[in-house]
Image (cartoon, rainbow, N blue to C red; front, side):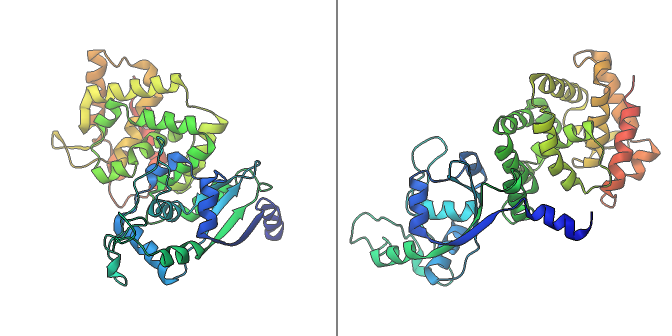
Length: 366
């Protein structure tokens, strides 16, 4: 197929429209449930008060803001695909943002900005009409008449169009980590599967094996590692970028193969119970000079988790001899030339991962 033919084929998958809408119109759509924000996305809404205030400042001053993207469902309702932070900030300011558990979120209180220091402490509704911190009615009207460009992915588009748009707009963004983008994609694709993966990543023995920083946990690196285990256990990297590989596997694992089952969860828990019983939070650290040391290493996770997982049926997670054997094999791994040659910040993941996964599958055979 030629480039022109490929473009013609793909263009047919995206049917879009777009036009400016006033903030007042957007508020009405949201209140009438004609535009929805998936409540599960609100866990990713983490702008600081200063960021929210700068965005509101931009609207007051007429500074152009980026378009929002919505997906038009078969019933005509719009799903917000991109613009969560911005629309949620507007809704929070006017006291209309719905909480995921029901009710409304507390109204936003603004902070001073560089250009509008008098925003400090301002609210949409004050304690009364004379409250100096209440945003004046004239400004409220100007605010609701301000326009935001809305890009609409129409219902005639390919079913995967909204996922493609969401991923391209958010990957590498300031506010979402790559795994949080994948989590949003999985929520849109299969909410029960997202809940399953989140539950798996919270298994105490899995968490106990991962000496992760608070920031890494906040950005859901634990879920990325769980996804990496399931993906590498079932398919080859094939020269792809690791992030691309994991994103591609979201649909493969949780829609096509539907691995979110009690059986797979039980195997995952057996694997990490065995690893925790063997080496606890040292499992994925470097073993050198007769002791574990340093930080968590992806280059240890790949051969150990995937390698032992491939041989899991040969082990009993509660058998003392098997536990001791796993601990010994983890330590021995660090004497192997292939392991040592593929560890370190300079290692190329596209080359490293296939080598280390193959090494781990062989090394953990009984």
